[in-house]
Image (cartoon, rainbow, N blue to C red; front, side, top):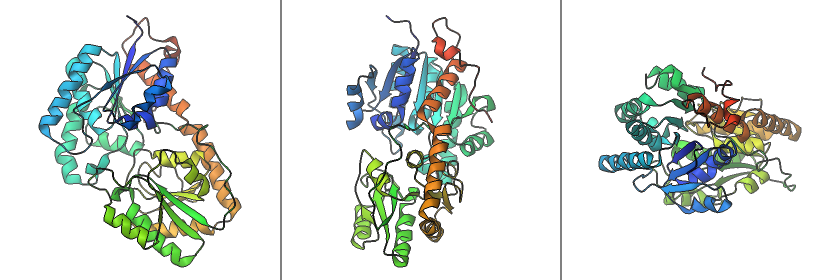
Length: 394
C-alpha cells in the first residue's frame, strides 16, 4: 500500500467536484498526494472518465436541501465510518453540510480537517433561522478544524465576530479559482444588439427578479438592448423561481431565456456585459469567469461581488434588492463608448490573471495543507518548500 499522504475532498454534489474542484484534484496529485473524492453521485460523475486517477466514494445520506435530524445524524455516521476506514491524512470540506457534518465526523474520527465556506446560503438571508440553528452548528463543528477558509473577508470577519472559530483558524483565499485558458477573451460577431446576460440558478436571492424588472425599464429606453437569462429553473431550492413566473417573464418578452447549459462561454462571448444582482456571495464564480473573458460586470454592493468589481473601474455596482438601482447601473454601462467598455474588460482580465487564476488558488491550498499537517517524512517536497508562504490571515 502506498505511504504517500492522502487528501479527501468532500462536497455536496459531484456537480461541485466538476465545476470547482477538478483543478485541486490535478494539482494535489501532481504535488505527490493521493486524492479521494467523497460526494453524492449525479450526472457529473463523468469527471472520472477524464483520467484523473482518483477514487470516488459515494455519499448516500447527504441531501442538499432541508434539515432532517435523523438523516443528518446518519450523514455524520456515514462520514465517520469512511474517515475511520480510509484514514486520510487531511480532509477538505466544501459546502455548508460537508462543513458542518463533515467537520463533526472528522473531529470524532481524529482526522485533521479544513473547511471552505463557499457562501452562507439561503438561511443566512433569514437571520432568525441562521442564528438559532446554523450559528450553533458552525460553532460546534469548527471547534477542532485546522483551518476555515473564506472566499471573502466579510464572511471571515462575520464568523470571528460571532466567535464561531478562533482567529488562527480563519483564512482568506480569493475564490476557488478560474481556468484562464478555458475562459479567455473571444471575438464576437458584429451585432446591432446590446446584450446583458444573467447566468446562474434562477433563485430570487441571486437577484433574478430584479434583473427582469430592470430589463423592462431598459427595453423601454432602447430597442437595441436585450436581456438574456441562462440557468436552470428546476433547481430544488426554497428561493427558486416557479415555472409559472418564468413563463410569464418569457411571454411578456422582457427577457430571452436560454435554459441551462454546461458551457457559459458562448453566451458570455455574445454579450456585452454580465449582470449578477445577487444578495450575497462567497466569491461569485460566474463573475470571475466573465472577468477572465474580458467582460465588464454589473453586480451589487454585497460581499462576494464587490470583492471583484470596483464601481466605475471594471464594471458598475448597484444596491441589492433594488431593481431601479440595477437598471441605472446597467444603463450607465450601455452609454459608455465601445473603447471604454473594452478598457473595463481588459482590467478584468488582468485582475483575474493576478488574483483568481486556479493555479494561484491551488498553490495557496497546498501551502495551507503543508502548514497544518503534522510533520511527515513523506510530505511532498513541492509542498514543504512553499509552506512558509502562508495564506492570508487578515
